[in-house]
Image 1 (cartoon, rainbow, N blue to C red):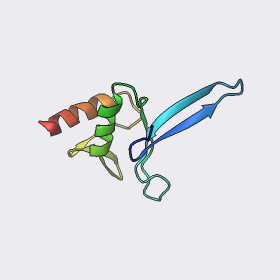
Image 2: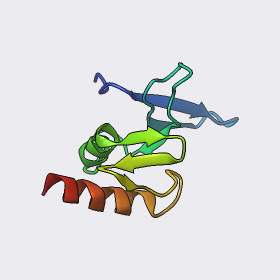
Image 3: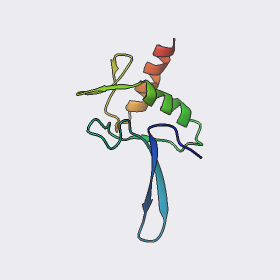
Image 4: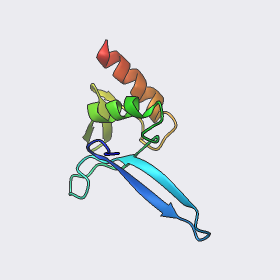
Length: 93
């Protein structure tokens, strides 16, 4: 399966041989302008498309992420996805 633009996967191998695969969204990856990697659910998960749409709609400045002019919390905080979903819903309306 080909991943959407800016989406990449990382496989972590543990000492015991177990593997864990993580999916991330990173715009401008491997450049000086690269965004921090934002964790996404697995591509076959029901939330994947909605969260990818949020990432595609976001902008970034020196203070962090914006969605339709609304400042979002840090991308690693629990509040990030709920607030981003609310901001995207307001943008769509």
